[in-house]
Length: 300
Image 1 (tube, rainbow, N blue to C red):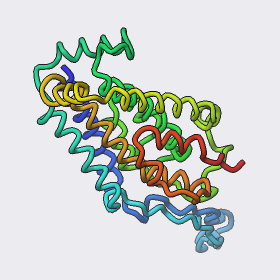
Image 2: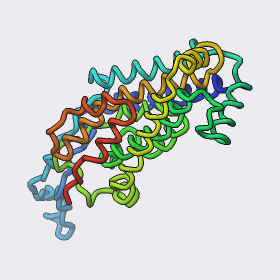
Image 3: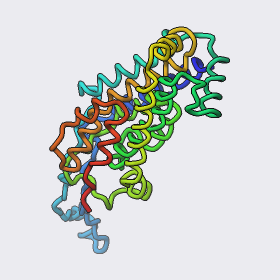
Image 4: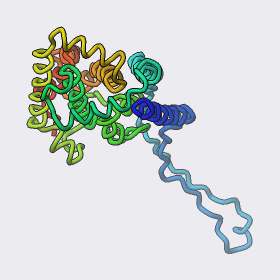
């Protein structure tokens, strides 16, 4: 049942988040990057004549080279933005467990079957259908925004949460967004640092335009069918008929609210400051897609 799936997803994500937090907290901040010591050596005592056998060992002192790399002092649970993301993640889980309608397994199964077999045919509430399909666009946009700064993340790797987010949404992506280290400095990520998929697919303008075109279609489809009957039908789905509709709607809401900080970091990384990140994040689904279309390429 969807409610059981969401409960298992929450349990898995809770364990993942708790493990990363405990691991990071258990390591002293000063010991997270141990200084590199080079060249320390002691000359062993010379064994030979009797008077040298009892001679004190001669110690050759060599200057130690200590790495001057400063440890990253970013602590996720001290950031207001990360605390808000944590609250959104917990709120989404609470909605799935305590608020969503129960006993809707059979109805939700038929709903998914109709969405797959007869897309945009009018058999499913058009508002929910546009919303449901948007949950395929949003993770793709997050992949394009997060993968450039995902190399050598100390707590969680980016690929598994992003891949799982296509099925589990913010349940899977939330722990990574909460615990990741920001990589927003200009020049901190260069095009040559990217993997093949990130450089070829997610940095591609064809990919960006394709997502923007589909998001435009979904927005137009929902708006053009947003009559009184469709709105009332969506409310009925959300409140009494479908746990899938209830949780998916809340999932898209939280994912949309979380875009602001991620887009702002991507702008800073690319040296873009002409338009505020809030302008793109304020338009659900379509706004982040438009940022992918207009964003500058990374430095070589």
